Image 1 (cartoon, one colour):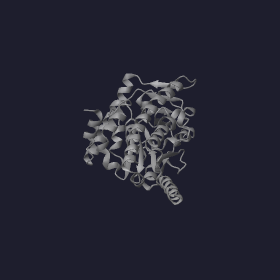
Image 2: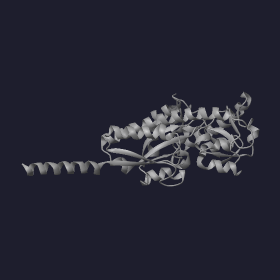
Image 3: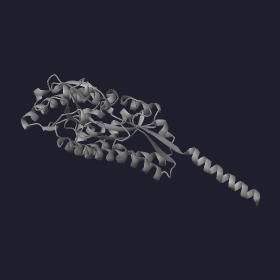
Image 4: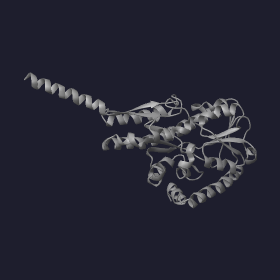
Length: 329
């Protein structure tokens, strides 16, 4: 009897040890500060859902502020190489890898409100661009506006000769069509670049006013024209994903899609409040272009968009069909 009891106890111990040994803790890397709103709005629900639905067998640990490695541009490679299990990043930072994804950011292709829904509905058309990783979520931000440190932009002519930070190659082509000189850099570098005069302004969304403290170095924000919207991704290392069983994989994929929806809602909400707060601050101004001036911006960007799509079609990307699908036509 004692032998049977001992055997049962040992079996239970080994079973418990095996369950701990098979548990997976996924490292999620993000270059944004640990105070960023994405943590509470998107990552915590994402992690909680995975832990709850896997019974604690799969957990997610956040590494914010570049803790796993500096440099926003390296985020995709961190997931690809397994430095992180999951990584947040912008396709625009490694544009050569995501030419089709980046069509979604062009003026007039999606709206801030319906963009994520349209992107998620057409993820199958992007499978070639994410075949080296597992795409968990993809969403758009609020519209990118023109931030300037010293000069107000009230007309297309006001942009001529200015150096404007852009989040991607396509956004750069739009800014170039507007008559400015595009400068590529991550959001985390904008503050110092404006403060030191390396750039005159930036194309970015209003969440950066607080998330990256850009309200401190920005005096004017111009809106009212058709503009770009950046895309954000959550991608996962293929080996890390393969280590999960089939049920766990589905849970992670479903949580990633929900994270994309939550991320989009958070970006729009935070951007709206940040822009309102900025407009109500002494010494700051939000400029809404006069209709005739907005039309000049839109005519210039429309020509650039047509060329970008035509060039992508010529490269065999089926860009026109993808853009049509995103528009819901």
